[in-house]
Image (tube, rainbow, N blue to C red; front, side, top):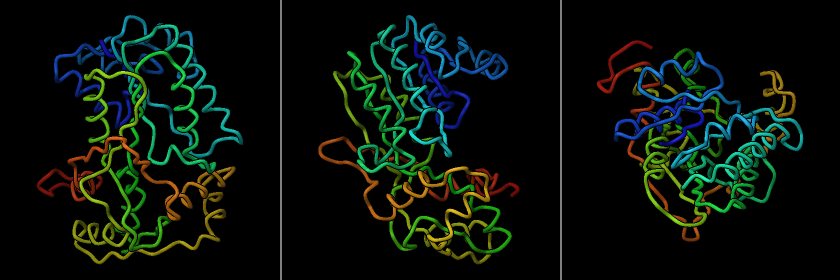
Length: 294
């Protein structure tokens, strides 16, 4: 049996469904019973656990062959990442107590970066789980294509996308969440020893200008990319409700300046199958044939 945290989200949901499709037994780890009902109907066991609750996670991970760890995202953390550290402590304690045969942990491209930024929350998770006496794979995917959902309404209504990733003609690795979940499930079903990193990118690296062109094709209207001046980022993010935009700004700087990147150095690199065009059609509420509403 495999325990899957974050199963109610895009990535965790694909992990769960992929495992079920191969005939595996799955324990869905959810925050409350309501969120578990759909997974119970699909034949999963359901375990109730908050990611900061070591005791509940220990029960959820008991008698399990493999565990998928999906740390909750926090885009506006407090200084020093106390929220992430609480999750890390609980996950470490539960895995150490239960000792599953293998663990796959969702990390991120750039987790090896020494500079502090929003993604350092994943760096801390990697550092902690690396001390466990069991096989752990850290899956480091590129920027999620689904983040382009931020662009859709602006592109449709104004014919422009306001880009924080810059320069606009710089190719960036991106990947669909469907590929992330599929690859994570496939890794769970394999055997390995020790700690390892697996990097994951999409079929192609894309520029912001290319994203604008793809949105234009999908929306049947002109769309252009426009760089948001860096000096305005802090005010914009605060207006969106962030109390401390610095970690997010540091993350964007890392992508733009090139120090948030794939580590390489022998880490296997996997290429996803889902294209940018497919993800955009999905974000527009369309099927693969391009039909539907948006």
